[in-house]
Amino acid sequence: MNPSPIGIFDSGLGGLSVLREVRAMLPHEPLIYFADSRYAPYGDKPEAFVEARTLQVCEWLAAQGCKALVIACNTATMHAVQTLRERLAVPIIGVEPGLKPAAARSRSKVVGVLATANTLKSAKFNRLLGALDGESRYLCAAGHGLVGLIEQGDVSGPAIREKLAAYLQPMLADGADTLVLGCTHYPFLSETIRDMVGNRLDLIDTGLAIARQLSRKLAEFDLAASPDAHPEVRYLSTKDAAHLHDMAAALLQVDARAETVAIEPAPPLPA
Ligand code: DGL
Image 1 (cartoon, protein in one colour):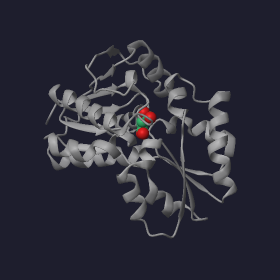
Image 2 (image 1 turned 90 degrees about the vertical axis):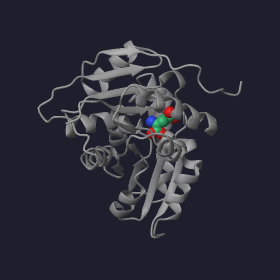
Image 3 (image 1 turned 60 degrees about the horizontal axis):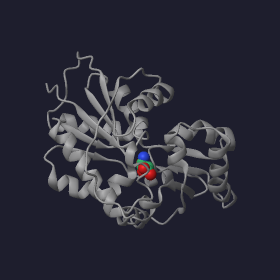
Image 4 (image 1 turned 60 degrees about the vertical axis):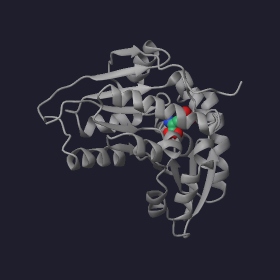
């Protein structure tokens, strides 16, 4: 039995949607949730920054003794997962937009994909898209502005609805019946999306699949914690622990103890 923590990392609060599934499936596993909110969003930062910062944070988490890492961020996975796997000795579980499950679910064979600009332009995403059977059409939209609003705690206000309408209406008009939530922040918009489009879009979120994959890796490498353990989650933010505490309470209904940490200097960003 291995009592070391699992690190769950995102640019900000989005990975909490993955943590929710991991907690539900593996409640006995100690977790460190790391929100790099000081540098969020990653989705429109230079790709070299996203890769270098992801490596920096994950190396730090590994140095804290994490036995496995979940990159609970599609953008960071797209740009850094390969290098991470080459550099770190612990199992790395990444996330990617659920294109395949969406294609399997769609009846109209028109699938909307909402993800960050960086995810959509990454080579990895385009390889995923290219490897599909070609039976479905994918209507991809970069959700500019959504992550920033979610980071501020807005998951249902007029600003978010206005942006969502601009992204989703053209997809619906073009026949989409399925929507891939290709950014881990977006599952927190599910209720608002349902309120706006009813059941005209089937929402595809990969949180549960990630939790399953993590569970498989822990078993494969003999890393699981004792099933009798009742560990607390450590919540770490590079910006504002109080905000992370409040958001975890609002989004997950958990009263989490949160700390602010600094991992500096961050890789250079163009002025
Ligand atoms: N939650 C992230 C993702 O899954 C990152 C969003 C961002 O920082 O732009 O892509």
